[in-house]
Structures are given as C-alpha cells and as structure tokens.
Image (tube, rainbow, N blue to C red; front, side, top):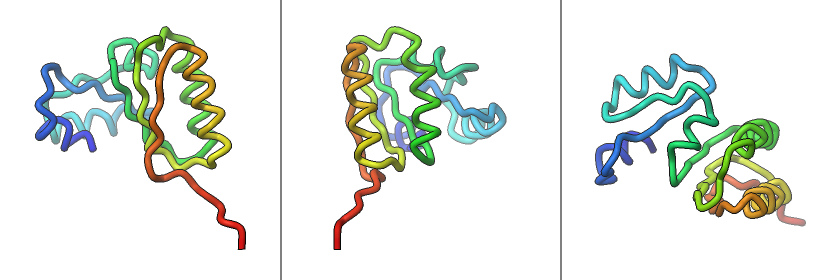
Length: 115
C-alpha cells in the first residue's frame, strides 16, 4: 500500500510511516523512498491528514487507537484496513467521530454470517 501511494499517489509531501517495529519502517522507507519515519504513532497522526492503519486484530486496533486518540484528531480521516469484528469497527468509529475525526473501514472486517 505504501509503495503504491508513493509511486502512484501524486503526493505533494513525503509519506509518513510508522511501524511498531522501527526496523520494519526503516526497511520499507529504504525500499520505496520518499518517506519520513515517525518515531511514535502519535507523531505520525499529528503530522498527517489521512491516516491508513492495517492491524491484525481487535486488540491491536484498540491499543493503537488508545494512543492515537491522545492527540487532536479533529478533521483527520482514518482509513482502517484492519481485520476486526463489525462491533469493534462500530465502536472505533464512535470514538473517532466523538473526537472530531472521520473513519472509513475497508474490507478486512470479519463478518459472521448466521447459518
């Protein structure tokens, strides 16, 4: 996703990336170029208008957004590509909207279909 944003996104600024494992962020930045690495998730959010997240599960999303929502998110747009339960996605949307931000959830949400 980051590679496509940098190479095809016609960005007017460098892409800010953050990973809980700094070396992964560094390796990605070295591969694709035109990136700035944020040292904390809060720093990444503070400097961004649109924030993409791709996390593995509800617990990871909750932990990340507990930190994210400590900064001003008013007017920021979050695009969640994380694998989460619908209930969790809805709760996250409520938290972000209450703080003045917006959210779009992408495929990856786990929907349980009754049989």
